[in-house]
Image (cartoon, rainbow, N blue to C red; front, side):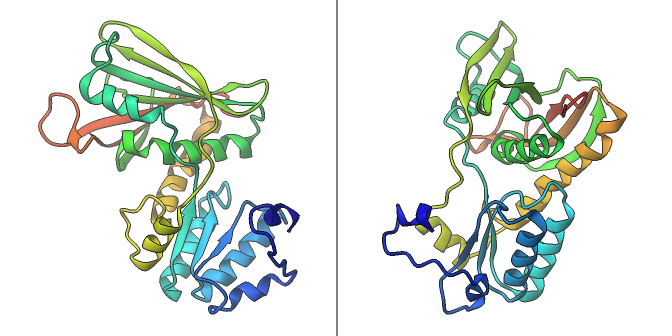
Length: 273
């Protein structure tokens, strides 16, 4: 309550969370990252969604895909909106989209982009959460993922993801490989904070659409990929490849006509320490 009072003076804290089950209380209920324990947070989310309360949940709610499926089923049965609150894409993503479409000024036509997530905590839960965030953020580059397979690398690989140690806070570095050169972008810090403007929230609540990035169906698709990586990590494939429809700036990239297939290759050896 003290933290919220900095942004909304006079806010009243109610120790009874079940007050949020009153549909007349607010337009929507926002549930942040688990601070009372994952199971308790999930139980409360299920109650809200099952009662048809418009809910915005911090993503991911778990490192497993199953709770996301369960919440989606409850959403369909109750009919209330359920949205995901996930990190926003960094500004670095915009030039990468442009380079994939038109080429890099010095590297030329881009053949591979490697997205390296630097984590101070490389525990299983931390890595899976970072993977979920990054797949969500990279969605504009990958497109709708249609196939997941373990590969030893491919000349067609467009986007790769890997984990590296970090001394302090989480950060990202990006390497682009083109026909003419290899360029490494400066390390930048964590994604922008999870956020939805009031207008975005109201629009998503009033007109739920699967095409909306914050739609819960997108959350379940991302967690299906995370679940596949976790399940197979013990078998130590060299790479995970995710094949999707790759469209940049509203037009297919590359020379092919129609949708261009791109792959996201994930180094799956020793993902977590």
